[in-house]
Length: 418
Image (cartoon, rainbow, N blue to C red; front, side, top):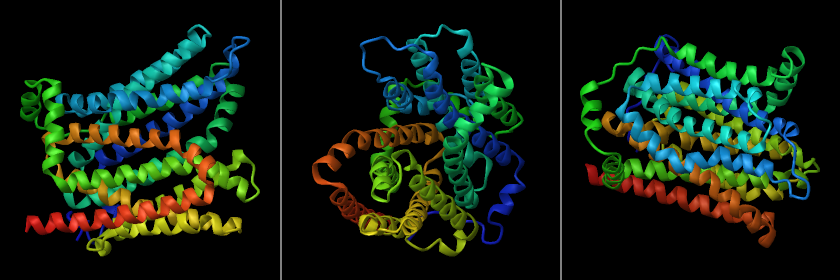
């Protein structure tokens, strides 16, 4: 039932390792993702250098998080439209260079919180152009039958950068400050961005200038309406995007709920990252399974399996009292998430024509970032009102229903296409 071309049946990740252009993109993406996570840790660490006005409540952390996430909501679709009008490599390399230079400028700027806030907003805004360019670059560098393995590798390293970035961010920055001096932290983060740019510079893309020139004749609003019209017509892509959005909604809610789960198992609140790290390990494992043995699982309803696995874990989480069992369940939840994320991202890439890649991926990033933000606003309030167990069971029921609905909807679309 899975409507994509199957992965290469013998090579798995091995074929990708011999693709020089793809490997340069992958390493550059890994460094850029790592820099993003460490940069967020850096902004929090720098707050001690920015005096707080006496008598005003300290909301600087939440303000920084807002400055980091707001550009994704405001400019996600715009980034995708620009990607279709310009070559991919200059956008990615230029984004890394700009972010690196802005980070290196921090020690030279006035020690005012507003300056740090604007700088964070600017760096996050530039990121909105890097993300869709990166997604559109993958189909240009690998064969269609290798997209499953390529997306599995990207998903693995993306989650790995998330785990490693937040885990080693503080020790890495402390080491840099002790070895390189007061500006050492900014040098490390800026250096990661610039190193990513340097690694991606030799990449050779085979783009179609004629398609890009045709796009440049249209205004941005027309292209935005085209992307919406395309999604309405192509129900497979829209269905895949809705499943990805649901997946990120669940993970955003779990980020909040993990703090309360930590207390349930006798951990300190700041140790909630154990559950997220375990889920991240699960996602890496799930992506690795699909990347290496995806050809054997190709005809299975993988997203349905993923949603049911996640629903099972959410439903029994608060009935579990053993910490190691809970961490094992978190790994299982992550594997289920990998079974959703990797196939659905592959489907979108294979079913979307090259001329629409940037706009569709920009709209996807827009939707996902809204999905990441909305649960942060309501999950804590729902937990206070109804309790942790009720919220988790409610999420389990919702995830089951969405998974079954998406599976049946996909089957109907495929039958209509026959």
